[in-house]
Image (cartoon, rainbow, N blue to C red; front, top):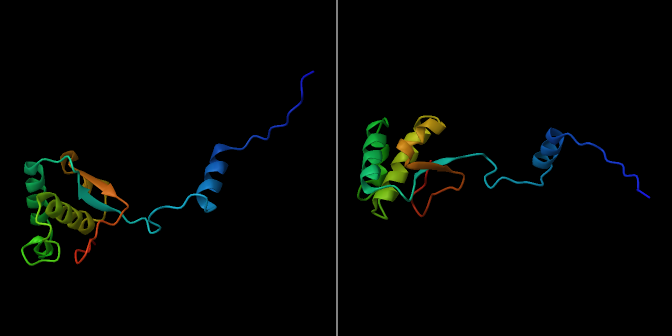
Length: 121
């Protein structure tokens, strides 16, 4: 003897709406802020080119923060300096995905990469 079951169809969009808006899922970054950083797999040549490009396309002296004595100079590594410069360019140009590509050597993150005296915009 087969048992009768009742199933109520729930539209997938309704489920997603309830899931994301009910507090069940919280974003790691409630403001939706993103930062652009260098991929760890980037070569030194790519990182150097990214620093040159970003710093030459930012108005003002934004890249002074990665120069000796600046708040983001240490650690004095190409990946650190590239990440700071790339993020400055990304922020300056409106946080658009296409401003954080660098021929595939960059990525966006929702985790603030700021550290010590180096505060990412």
